[in-house]
Image 1: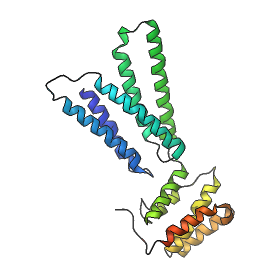
Image 2 (image 1 turned 90 degrees about the horizontal axis):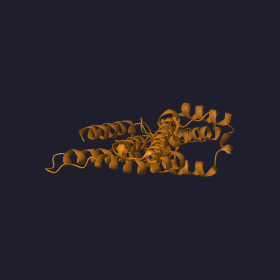
Image 3 (image 1 turned 90 degrees about the vertical axis):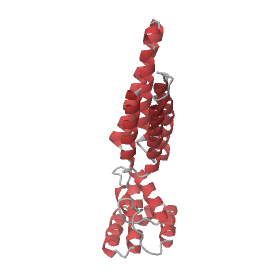
Image 4 (image 1 turned 180 degrees about the horizontal axis):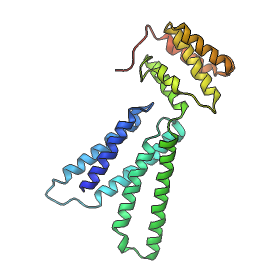
Amino acid sequence: MWAWIAFLATTSSTLLWMSRDQPFPEISARWGWIILLISGILAIATQSPRATNEYLAPILSAAIGGLGVVIGVRHSSITKRDVLVAPFAGLWLAVGTITLLTKTWPDYNQTEQITGFILATLVVALETFLFWKGLIIGIQGVTWSQAALRQLDRGLIVGDRGSISMFEKSWDVEESWLDAMSHAALYRIHEHQNNPKLAAKHAQLLERLGGEEVVDSAWLETIDKCIKRLKKPILEEE
């Protein structure tokens, strides 16, 4: 049981640590705290006078991992707001599933063993894909753009968690329209911040991409509305 507690506590702590550098840190942080809480409950359960069921930890790991994979894939593929939940949830799912299979392996007949082996292989393949997509490919530029717009709407302009920093990360070599959106936003923000040199720089880069004509008018209107609500430059989020 203590091996499971250490595994869950270590992975959840790693997830919490890595979530700090995410555009939307609350998504992966929430899952990190959930798993850390589960490891704490398991640690308390070891002090019970009655022995804890040996299947409890792997079942919890597989169940929460399976749910996390579904939610994580949705975030990484549809909302594009998080890339950490899916690979970490895949790890919990894989370890939990394989542990359950190995514990009951001697009781299986040949057909069940073949089925179990195929299931274990699929789970490992899934985790490999999730790891590659989430941690190797990493965060897409559009995710930083979404986070930057949220920070701008909150009035958070400068600093590591400010909209300027996030817009500067929202580039994509294959999507020039995203670059144009970022330059248009940065041009307006630096004008509001009374930084004429930086404003001119981004205005020039925007013109190279086709000017404001290539940017969705709804995006420009949203940026302008957010900036109009700013009475004075606000430092990064406390």
